[in-house]
Image (cartoon, rainbow, N blue to C red; front, side, top):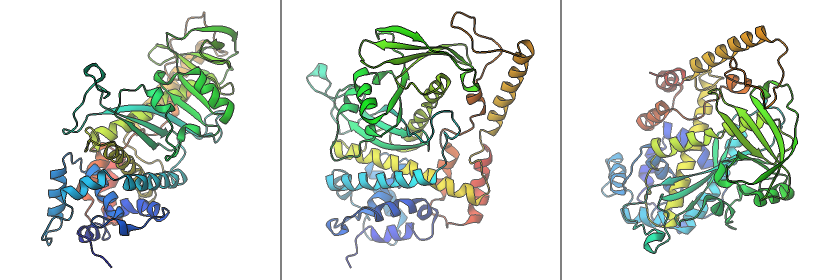
Length: 453
């Protein structure tokens, strides 16, 4: 059996440690991927993924710092566990990229089976997949020479685009597409990669996107072929014709709905809906959807939950090592994004197991007081509204919106935390080499899940 330079370090890091418990689902994911480790002479694939996840957790930005950090972790080593050239070659390897794609896809499936459904109980959606799509931009590596179109090049002046598919039901990213060229987000979405899993073609899915992805023809085709629909914000530049006014049912989810119209878009052949909704701050929002079965309040609420993906981007760029690219090749950029996705999912699965061990059925309780105040405020406003008009029904568009109701029922009672708190990331950064034990989690982790220090 061949012994590689990183084997000793990997063995010590996974010796009944918190890191081993954290990384265990990824080991299960790799077990479901068929490949031979013999082709990797210096750095096994499992060690590569582990060290990449550690670099994410510790927010190590430079390769020099990573190599030196790994060297100091194994004080008995006479040479570097991983050479700089070895890591650079691994980041630029198409074979490793393909294996990492497959393993993260298996990890996503495992997470969807394990994590709780955050959208259970919402009217009319049943078990339909709910996928948010959005893009964030990453600063280029110091070695990357950006040449934008105005200078005769093709690079995006915003940085590298990371187009991310996000599962709103389970609160995890599903896939990331990277693009360095100056292309619109909708164009990147349409560009299909035959070698990758296509999350844009999920049957009966509800896609939640922002206005950059408004394309009537594209979403009409998705609805016709896959029965998949979309929810987005209305664009002021869209040309449309009102064809019918739909009745707004007197349901709790429709409390803040002002109107619901069927419209004909100039850029689409099938009918769409235009929904106007009043926010708790008194701002009128207009939503666009081609789903005729959902209640208008559910449409507004699902778009509101798109914010969960923004919270993921916050963790991805500010708590992990993804604000800046590690390498300059497209393969390195994608592998870094996949490692960030892997790190986030592994942390969610790690926390789910701890919730059960620590008898925390509601999960992270740092926002409990905030949610309680929201519910209390909503009930007070409802009591005042009922006292003034006990038979209040849905109102017409011409009517003045009521001033007493600040929240609708969904927003008031929805208590799912959108992101992983910074306290949890700090725990993993400081305790990943400690021995995995229930006592450690009771003393060090449980207080962080019950409130802010």
